[in-house]
Length: 149
Length: 83
Image (cartoon, rainbow over all chains, first blue to last red):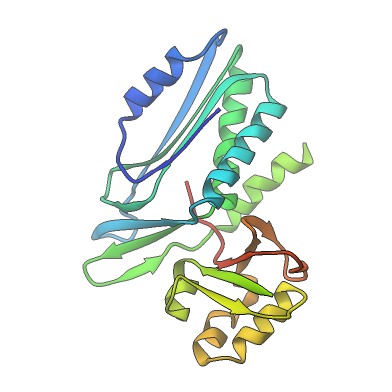
């Protein structure tokens, strides 16, 4: 179980390779990488604020819950904060298990939870404007499916 | 009691500072917010729509009616947008 909160950029390929090498008994590895998108049009950069201390706690709790629900050999959550340009990697999730179903499901679970339960806030900055990204109701809906099952 | 208040994202921008320490006898989060909004207009502006806000007590998500007894750190912020 690996949780990283960092300002510096990362290579998704390198992180995935190291994660894969660290697994024992895994037959399936799933990874997701989030990239900064220019939704507003004319994005100069994105600012990601977080709550140091609570962020690490929340991500660790989410990772623990995933490990209780699925037979994982390992999991990784990496999330950046600070100033990010368009097309940069923001975050990454990786899960490993003996079989693919558990790895896929656990990766989706980690993503759904961290989107609405980890204390990060995104602000989009364009040449003329800056605005906080609003939370989506669909993100809350995505969470609900894990509590019913 | 003395508690540290932390503000994030647009809550921080509206109030104009990231953290402060206050002395309060408020029993719950709701009571604390009621005290804050009477202090200055910028607090009233930040807390005008409580449905748009989340609260954490000692770094765990909490509710508006959660008790403050023994709590050292109260954080207010908008819904989270990670990922």
